[in-house]
Length: 302
Image 1 (cartoon, rainbow, N blue to C red):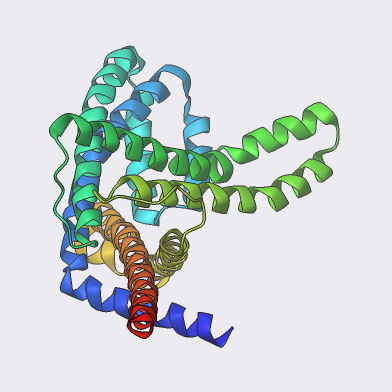
Image 2: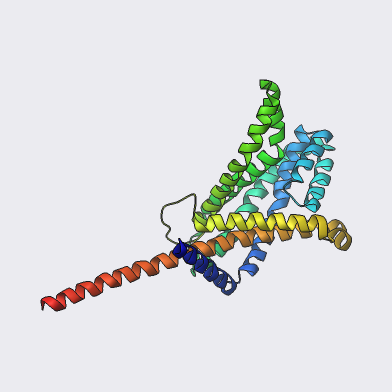
């Protein structure tokens, strides 16, 4: 047990040192900027759909639920955009189509930036061709979209489904209890899947078979949850972004949160890279040990 704890601590220390050497925070800044550029396209799709189907009451309730996940400044920006969208429902189809096209390009470009950062953690250069890179990027976008959909589905849209099921079955209290109990394991499992898939697909290295639970994915998830929760509390209680930046506060807070998310993913990749290096060193030591034994046996027989 002590040996495992010691190894884990050594891996974390080495990962932190490698993260500094690889300038992880700088790469996370570039990735946060790329992700931020993808937000307008996602907004276009969201706005287009809302302008077709939503009303003011729906917007208010959804924004209230989104406040459980996003910083307050980001939810304010979301609310203002959705309110403007439902006032012009005629442009919904066009906005949705344009948003989808822009979304595919910007999200895959952001994923390509992430792939570069993840490959760097292994001390490699990304040699994948353009087409393969974009295909892998689409896979990464899908994995992250699954995680985002779970967050939105369970924490934002979940109460609607819970109330509907409760009313349909006539067991509102039981359904509410089951929903509250089950949503957190599902949410954590879904985010773990998304992070594990990204850390598996992203680096341009030869990987072992895919596993849901890896040291890097678990580390990235824990770091992301702690960082996101801590920053949300800071922005809500101690931050002065509204006073300093006014309407730009939503942009500032969103960029910082994306930077924290990017840093968590990149640090998870550093952990996986260090675990891999440790395994390779042990394999080399075992092979050298066998080689020495064989050499000794030959010397004896001579």
